[in-house]
Image (cartoon, rainbow, N blue to C red; front, side, top):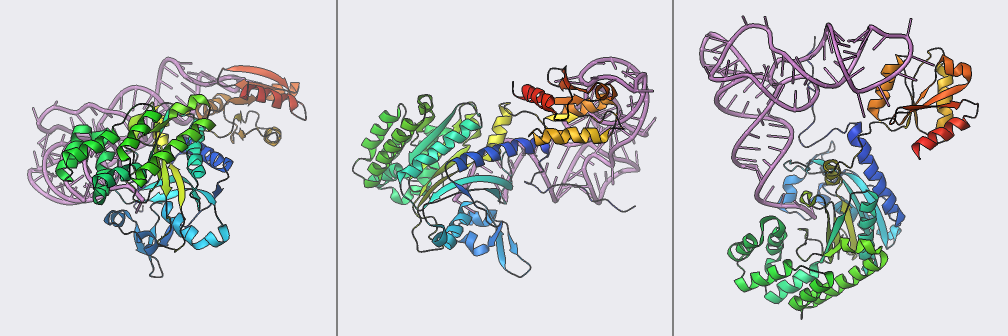
Length: 447
RNA sequence: GUGGCUGUAGUUCAGCUGGUUAGAACGCCGGAUUGUGAUUCCGGAGGUCGGGGGUUCGAGUCCCCUCAGCCACCCCA
């Protein structure tokens, strides 16, 4: 007897059994549908890139998290850790033939060798959409609308899209003479919701070296509250005189007005100016946004994005501005699960046909084929086991309907259509065209 | 990367200060019931106690290492 190898998965990597994969695919399909409805086109890029493509920006953290190795030809390669860098490489390489504006979506796995935590894995999926090659605010507005449509379609309950503009904070920092400390200050302000005003104030003054007055002004902006109009007016006062700040406020004002004009009135409250949102990412230069679920704000942002001036300057001299966002698939799934909004279905077909009469396999197969031709998903059980066992199987998998077809039914040219949710059987005539059967099934599936 | 907690059947867990053949519930398979799915009754399969090493007469229980999970920090391009 040889020693068996223990079946196991790598740290941070996951298997997806049907009950995980079915809701996953549903979200992916929904994202795809919404993205396409705005004219975004699918692209894909390789999982592996030349190492230099990925390390171009070269921060230490990137280095640590990057999966890298030499391929069989001795080339230094790395696995993509997001979809933005490959997009930058892609457009730099192909923009001549793509033309602008270029709208694409990409739904694919990425890999980061970071430490794991709940909801943070080493292999995970991103669902990005971006518009490249235009600075028009229309694209920023569209980004908000896409996210709104998407979350509405996903039935996540009420949600809030928090919107800011990098120019607002930059304007204030410039005015306060703190521009050189931007990164640290943004990082600290980003923690406001998490660690509170006092700690942020202390960190700003003690760690970063801002004066109390400077820190007060920063906090005043970050803690603004109230209506979008009121907050924008306050923010405008704080940054007045700076080009970046005034531009940021006006962009925000215009964006929020356009979104409000487009969405139904009950949706307007979902759009919030949020001066403390900045998204740690260096490359954002304009609008930035994050989205939280009102029923589960603690889980963090489930869709985030923003505008950047120059996506691909590492790879091309051509200026390629863009705007885009990403859906946080794993967080969203975790949230939906926690909120009990995921059905526990393990089957992909609606109708189950038990193998009842072992002499009539072909009859079952033919009926199944007719139903499928009518667009109804059908599973035929492979073994002629006891009917009770087969129905138990159907019940556990979450089938909606079972068709009971035994000797009696065949003799009478009829079929029992059993609604598994309610437990009731309806007898339907079994004709060659199966029309009565199809009608009954449709009637149960879509009352 | 740092620190803390955890790891026993498919699942959730029990197993007293180390002591004989490691238990339960649920689930799974089969039967009661050769034509009807969350009920009932009966029976069955399933664990080298995450893995490795050590202490001991003896380790699921103590020690070390390792792997994996959870939590916090760090970080999240």
